[in-house]
Amino acid sequence: MKDQEDSTTLFGDRLQQVLDETGMSQSDLARKMKVNQPQINHWTAGRQTPSYHNIVKILRAIPTLDAHWLLTGEHF
Image 1: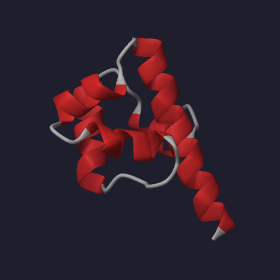
Image 2: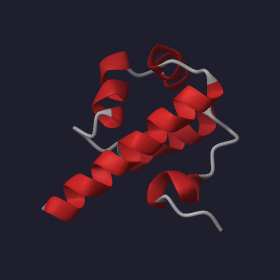
Image 3: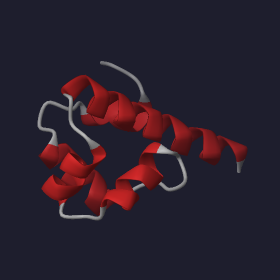
Image 4: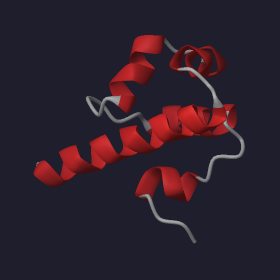
């Protein structure tokens, strides 16, 4: 269970990093994805991990985002 929690938190950290680097707010991302802003906050805080469907929406909302990096933290 600890590994899953660490993975969730790291995903959230990476998502927040992207938002910070792009100047996009959680509200901006929520609007682009057509989800509620608190949902984005749950992901960035590491309380939840987005579903596959929502990961696809994140990637569509931020086209320059590297999916592999977002999911694993690794660059090719």
